[in-house]
Structure formats: C-alpha cells, structure tokens
Image (cartoon, rainbow, N blue to C red; front, side):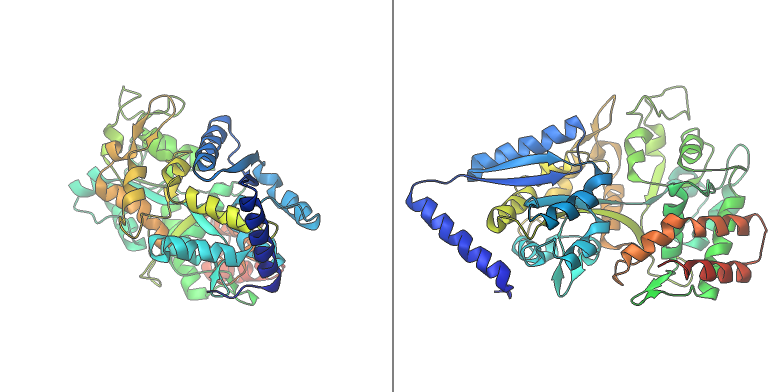
Length: 453
C-alpha cells in the first residue's frame, strides 16, 4: 500500500464511514463533478453518454461541466481557494506539475489508478511527462505527436530513406527539390505564428537542445544549436519565399508541390479527402485518397548530436483533485480509461491517439479499436481504412518517446514563457535572412532567454 498523507487518509476514512452508513440504509447515490475543456456540442454529448453509462454500471452520477480552455487555470485556482474544486479535471500538460505542487491534484490517487490499470499499458512518453515524486501527477488520457509528412512514393522511387534524421531530410531535398513545381520542404518562417514555435521546438528537441535545465535557464550549447540553425536554414531555403505557416504548408502539400512538411495529425482526415473545406488538389477529385496512399509520416526525428531522436508531443490528462470524492473519482477515471476508453477516444480520434494501448491481457486492444473509429467531417472513414498498419503504428508510437522542453526538468512553465516570447522564432528568422552568423545568433538567444523568469 502506498503512503497516504494524513489529510487524504482522514478523507478516505470519512468517506468509508459515510459509504457504510449509506449502505446500511440501502442507499447508493453519489454525484461527482467533471470539468472538461472538450466543450463543442458533439464532443460534450459523447462525454455525457459515457457519464450515463458509468452511472448505469456504478450508480454514481457524473455532472459533466464544460470549461473554456483559456479559463481553466484561473477557474481551478479560484475553486481551490474556495475549497470547491470538481472531482476530476480533463486538462493540458501545462497544468500537471504546477497543480501538483500547489496541492490542487491528488497525485497519490492518480498514481494508484495508473498502477491499477497497469503502468506497462501506457505510452512511456506520456507517463514520463507526468512523473512526480516517484509517482504521477495525473492520468494520461490521449495525445498526439507532431509529424514529418512526406511523399513516400517519391522517396521510394528515388531510393531515399524515410526522413527520420536531419541528414535524410537534406538528402531528400537535394534529390527532390525542383521549385516551383516541387519544393523540397515547406518550413515555418512566420515569426508571430505559434506554428513556427512548435516546429522549432520539435527541430531543437530532435538534436537534444533545450534552453532549460533543472535550475532554470540553461545556455544553449553552441555546437549543437549551430547544427539546428544550419538545418533549419537549409529547409527554409528549400521552401517558397515569404511568411510561411501551417496554411501554405498544407496547401502546397495537397497540391502535390511539396515533398515534406511538418504538421499535426489533424491533417490526416483532410489528406484523405474527408473535409470539403480543405480538399487535396493533387488531381481533379476533391475526395481523392490518392495523396493519402502516397504519404508516409515520421514522428521520432533525430539530429546529428541526438541519434535517439525525439517526438514533440501534446498530452492531455485526467487530474483527480484534492477536494474529490476520491474513491468515486478514481472509479470514474478507471472506467474512462478502460470500459469507456474507446468512447473517450471517439470524441476526436484524429487528434486523440491512445496513450493506453491496451490491457494486460490484450496489449493492443485500444490501439486496434481506435484505428477503427471514424474520422472526418463531410465524409467519414476509419483511420485503419485510410492508412497502412505500419503507418498507424508510427502515428501511435510517437507517444512512446514524446517530449517537451522543461517537462523532465520541472521547468515547463519557464520553457512555455520562452516559447511564447517568440524570441527564438525571431532570431532564427534573422539568421535565415543573413542578419548575423550562427555563433552570434546563439549568443543573442542566450542573452535574451536569460532575461525571462
């Protein structure tokens, strides 16, 4: 049995006494509150359906309460101060460590849920992002990893290796780039777009470079960062001129004019002609699946100084709060991650990769079920019908090695401030444009990032 803090132990004893009293009276009726940022009507309806199924099985009511994502932090802080937190919160990675340290999350309860379900059934990367004092801050629910999307048909025809490394990308650019008919890459170069921030963090992580350490700001290594800068300049030079972000990269790839782009998995249904607002234009059929069939993806990407590579990941969690009816909250989270897990993923399967692949008895149960969930907007089809089994494995496998700046060091908040400042975006763009050399650019980055607290 894990160590229980006195406050939690007292609450457990009190809860047990109440449960015994209610049982003696023949009463079994509890209500727990669940905050969710998935507030779109269709997604909310799916969560309410799952809550109804949970009640039918356990007798416990779940009040599903939508909360706008941008308001989640302030609402949770206010509720904590008032002693009125909900029982369970579906939240982003950015809150896991700060809420655990503030006492908002019951980390013992989350750890017990993960152990009961089986630590080995979860994607290691998603768990690593929630590691805390020998346990976990919260229970990972779903996630996605950024991908290099590439023309596998062209790579195969030219004997090129998949773009899993800086070198493989540069080799492919040398062979395939023929602008304006075909651009070797479409790199993010629009400084004030968050898209550029995400792409750059991915490329920095791939080479093992981060601006934070366990004590806060950590100066960027000159040699490794120079490799990053030189690589990014090369892919930018293989791109069209101008201020580029997600829009141009998708349009050019869909038109058959880009060999490689970096994108989120939310492109997967559009790539297969399932969304009329963003159709492939590689031929005259806006519903064509030809481009999807010609596409490969890479999630784990490596630079020369980090051969093991990294995947840029975004993971969401179920946090059990300090004010929770702990037993009921734990049972709801377990249900949502087990009997109800396919329903949980069905809320938006193209962006909710299963961080729990299966059970101890059936290790691929949820991965296989997820691959059969329909995706799309104007037309729907399962991902497993659109993409090969190997590609499905690559899509999901990125969560095994998913990383973000500052997570392992407990400095996610500082890293987020650095990213949001767009200092790195600006200085990388200035390097691409020839304003200063690599050594001076790294020095300027270190000087500017050191000021952020």
